Length: 190
Image (cartoon, rainbow, N blue to C red):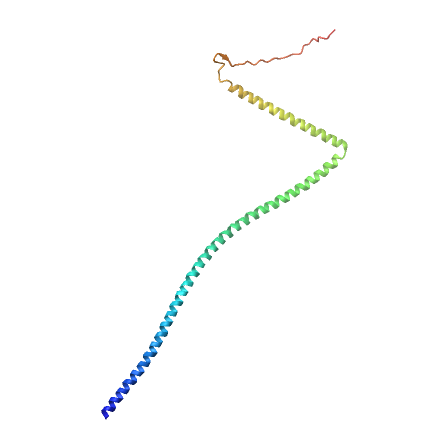
């Protein structure tokens, strides 16, 4: 009996060990499943995070390109602003110059109007303008005469290039100057 008791205790111990080990195996399997589920969940999360990272990098690249484009546009606009500021300052200076000229011309006009309210001054001014117009016409006529003389010289110089006759016919027409001098004796004298 002692032998049976030992055997029974041994069997009970082995069963208890198997039971404990079975329970540990079940718990380990359960923890393994949880760990596997956690790994699967972590892998899914990793894939999702990688997709998010890829999307974020793409958006970052687009944003970077947009930023570079915006910077280039901004520098272009800044250059335009600088040019426009320069133009603005020159226009302001021109405006002030023109305003000064307007003041001078207004004063000159006032003086001229005061001057022309007298009839004698107005007549003198009209005569002066007529003389200036006549002088301009004379100058223009003299200039036209000079131009015509120069043109005649060139035409004469080019001439017919040395040919006085062609096919037996003369192509040279002599110029004849006719001078008329007034007679000293009058025909109606009695």
